[in-house]
Length: 361
Ligand SMILES: Nc1ncnc2c1ncn2[C@@H]1O[C@H](COP(=O)(O)OP(=O)(O)OP(=O)(O)O)[C@@H](O)[C@H]1O
Ligand SMILES: [Mg+2]
Image (cartoon, rainbow, N blue to C red; front, side):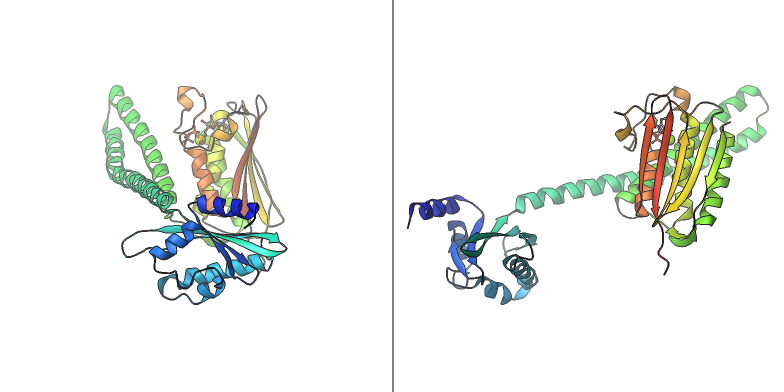
């Protein structure tokens, strides 16, 4: 063996991944120490050895592993035939006594003729950590969904009682107290509904009723709802709504997302200022924009406004819970769309929702 070969062999043997070098036909040219030891420990020395055809070994695999072996062989062929530079796949390989996961990789190189490095690396520890993390996240999401759900009923009772009390209260102090209770209970109800929506979206169970809707119908509803909200806030709304075609959407949810933007524009914009709600269709999407001439958002703050519970520095009477924009984003993304904001301090803010249109078929 030449010095270079000795060096290559020592390097391969020092690695814990199982490594084989194969030629263009799939024949095994060399195996490293980790591979040989693994094969011996798993009684597979007979079929996988130098000189054997690795593709043949994969093709003749039987039992649970045969599907993964076939997919891996397909990847090897794609690399050897130059259809791809490399291929990698993760697969389970449990033994009767051990829970195991591996990642198999194939990397092409040229050594006179095309050859490839096949490696299998044990990634069980990473898989276990990922599974533990997923369990923790699932527990957190379930907890959030359960708590939000459980809070709905008592909040309805509080609101109902406060409303009945308000109808009967005759003196000013009682009325004021009950109005405050009602306001806070309504704020909490909104927050609980928002949290429930986010928790359901996290667990992939956001209830959405998709139906094909003409853009014109959606826009008409948006204009009506936005106008009512803006009036309530003492501002005025300018609409420039155009667009054609249809989209597959949950109208109520899209309305909710757009109203989040209108609510922000009315809340943070100058009092009695003008808010613009516009739309247009271009290529295969519907673009809905809400713009205000408010204080704007600082550049370094802009990427954070879609984070849950993020609230800028606003006076106490404007304080929300920081869930509006995350909700809008969740809804828009569940429709296959995206949302973005541009803003200039002192000039105003424009938030745009892009939604995919249905094809003509
Ligand atoms: N049009 C806007 N002009 C200026 N700042 C804005 C605008 N829209 C959003 N922001 C900033 O982004 C933050 C996050 O907005 P988001 O709607 O998520 O939460 P919120 O309005 O604080 O509370 P919530 O919507 O839950 O009542 C706001 O607190 C505000 O600082
Ligand atoms: Mg908001």
